[in-house]
Amino acid sequence: MKVRRFSTAALATVYVAAQVESLITREAEPVLGLATGSTPINLYRQLVEFHRQGLSFSHVTTINLDEYVGLQADHPQSYRRFMDDNLFSQVDIPPSNTFLPNGMAPNLDRECGRYDAILDAHPIDLQILGIGRNGHIGFNEPDISLKTQTHVIDLTEDTIRANARFFSTEAEVPTRAITMGIQSILQAKAIFLMAFGRDKAWAVQRALSGEVSTEVPASFLQMHPNVTFVLDEEAAEMLDDPHAAVLGHENLGSRL
Ligand code: F6R
Image (cartoon, rainbow, N blue to C red; front, side, top):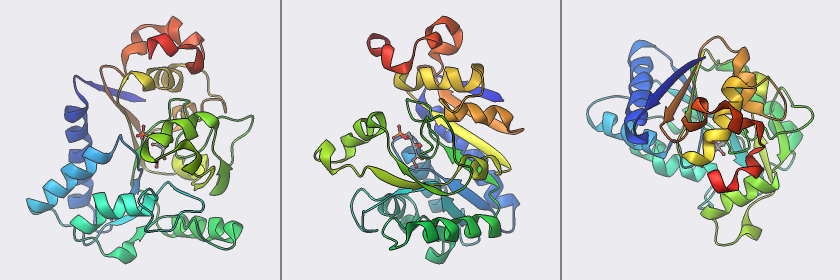
């Protein structure tokens, strides 16, 4: 796996945006795998800026990793709304080319099957990932086993606590999500995992250097031939301190 360490998250973001721009200008029908959350928000700002400078998204297809179960598409914290607000409404991508799971589907199993069919029809060229501080990717949470394809997942306490910052109270955070599975993520031709800040340092260290384990879903990226971790200095901090990673992320309170 390649690691690109930048002195700031802003510089790291420009690097990833340039990779996306290169794909979009090179390919006739590029497919981007996208993430939500704090980490890629400035990537989307940068891509909107590139669009204002002439980059067209009219031929691009996007497939998002995940969506909360139980939030309407226009709920301020739904991932559909996040993508509409931060990217889709500000570039010339046809709305019918943008895919997210439907967390309001009456039959969630059928919705997972529908999403897998979309993934089969549109192989992802470049997948953007964030990483949870517990090592999750998409919403593939640490567990004794991982699902390969799109599925409904119970979010861990840690993820609910981390995501509560976007809601008025922790009780409002949905407890379930639909997420692409690990195998679908690994099928992308190229993967860029972005991680910024000290609270990601443990997960980054374990993903890159520890053994492949379902307890750290991001460690499965070691099995992919074309992954780049794009880090700021803080997220890269424990790569120089391998002993720190022996502790679980929950034991690192004072270091995070
Ligand atoms: C979001 C997603 C999650 C986030 C992760 C980090 O679509 O799939 O895996 O990437 O929870 O979130 P932030 O960037 O908010 O720290």
